[in-house]
Image (cartoon, rainbow, N blue to C red):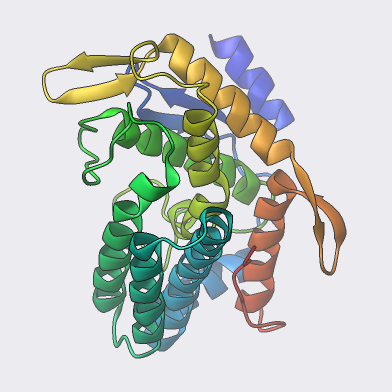
Length: 284
C-alpha cells in the first residue's frame, strides 16, 4: 500500500515485481538520492559520441566472452578431453578476436548472438542430468526448463544490478550496448553481459547437476510456455542470493562478495566516464 511505498522511498529500497510466470514486470524506483548533473552529462556524451559508445559496447561484450571462455576452460579441465567443448571454445575465441574489428554496435550484437548460440550449444556437455536437454535459446516465451531457468536467472541479475546502480551516481536509463530507447533501463542490461556466465549460469549448472531443481517437480507448462513453479522460483532465488553473498579473493581488493563486485563495476564505469581510468570489465 501507499505507506509501505513511502517507507521504501525514505529508506532507498527498490522493489521489483515479477508476474506469476517469474517474468520481470517492473520496479518501484525511489526518487533519486544521489544526483550528479556532471555524470548525467558524461553518460549522455559517451552515448552520443559514437566512438566512445562503441568502446563501452565492446568492453561489456568482451567481458562476457572472456568469462564464458574461463568457464568452459574450467569444465574442460574437470572433464578431460571433450571435442565438443574444445570446438565451442575455439569458435568463441575467434569471435572474441572479431570483436576488436567491429565497426558498429549492430555488428557487435551479431557477434554476440553467434557467440551465445555456440556457448549454449555446449551446455549439454556441462549438464550431467539427462532430464535436462538444451536444444536452443528461446526467450519469449521460454519453451523448456533450461530456457525458463535462464530467463528467470537473467531477470534476477538485471534487478540486482539495477539496485546497485541506484546506489551510485549513474543513471540506469542510458546504456551503450543495449539501445537507449523507450525501455525504462538499459545500463543494467549492459553490465549484466559481464556477469551472466559468472553468476546466473553457474547457479543453473549447480542446481541441475546437484539435483536441486527437478524437471518433473519444479516447472509448469502451458501452451508453448514453460516456467518455474512457486517452489522452483523459491529454490532458485535462495541459491542466487547465496551466490551473490559468496566471497572470493580479489587480486587488488582482498575478500569481496559478488554483490559487492556488481557495485564495484558501476564505480569502474563512473571513473571511465570522468576520464580517470579506462573501463575494463571484470574477468573471473
